[in-house]
Image 1 (cartoon, protein in one colour):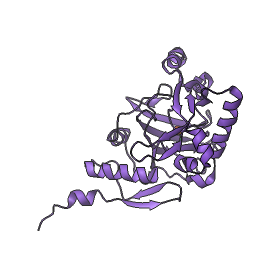
Image 2 (cartoon, protein in one colour):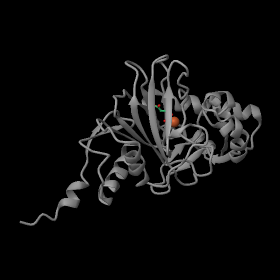
Image 3 (cartoon, helix red, strand yellow):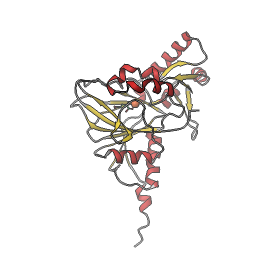
Length: 286
Ligand SMILES: O=C(O)CCC(=O)C(=O)O
Ligand SMILES: [Fe+2]
C-alpha cells in the first residue's frame, strides 16, 4: 500500500483559538522535533492567521529553541539582556526578590532598529505560583477601529523609536555591563518608522507605535507629538484587541512581532520567574 501522503499529513495542525482578537493553542506539536519545510510553512500560516501561537508541555533545551526559531529567519542578539551561556541568541528574562519584572509596558520587541524582529519565541522555565500572565494585542484591529479621517492622518505620520527611551542604564545596572553601555547607546541611535505599517503580502495595515520605544512623532511640534502619541497608545490599549495567556511551566509563546504588541504582568514580586527568548529578525517596516 502506498504511503506517500506523509508530507501532507505532517503539515496539518490542530489549532484551538483562544480569543476572537488573536491567539491560538497548537495542540500535539513537539517543537523539539526536526520538522520538514511543509510543517514549518504550516506554522508560519497559523501564525499569520492567529498572530500568537501557544504550545504546551514542550520542555525544549535552549539549543532546540534556537534551532526551531532559526527555521523562520536570522536571530537577533540583544545588546543588554544576558544570554544563555554559550548561546547568545537565547536571551534570559529572569526576575526574583532582587529584581522586579519590568516588561509591564505595551511594546513590540526591538523596534529601535531599522529591521525590527518579525517574531519572538518565548519559553517558560520557572514561573511564580500565581501571576506573571502575558497579554498580546492585535494591532491590525487597533488600526481598523480608527475612523477614516484618523486613519488618513496616521497614514501620513512617521515616528521615532529610541533604544534609550526604554533602556536606561539603571535598568541594566545589575547585569554588569557598565563598561560597554556607552558603546551600546552609540550603536543604537534612534530610527524612524511609519506610524501605520502595511503588510506587504496582504496590504492589511496596523498601528506601529509602542509605549516602550516610540519617543515621539516626527515632523510635528512637541505638543502635537504628545497629544497624537498619547491618543494612539491609549487607543491601542483596549481589551477587545487582546488575549491574556496564563503560563504553565514548559509552555511556549510564538508571536508575530509586526502586527501585535505585548505586556508582561509584573504582579508576582518577590517570586521567581525565568523565561528564555529567541528573537527572529524581520524587514524594514513600510
Ligand atoms: O516575560 C514575558 O512574558 C514577556 C516579556 C517580553 O516582553 C519579551 O519576552 O519580549
Ligand atoms: Fe517583549
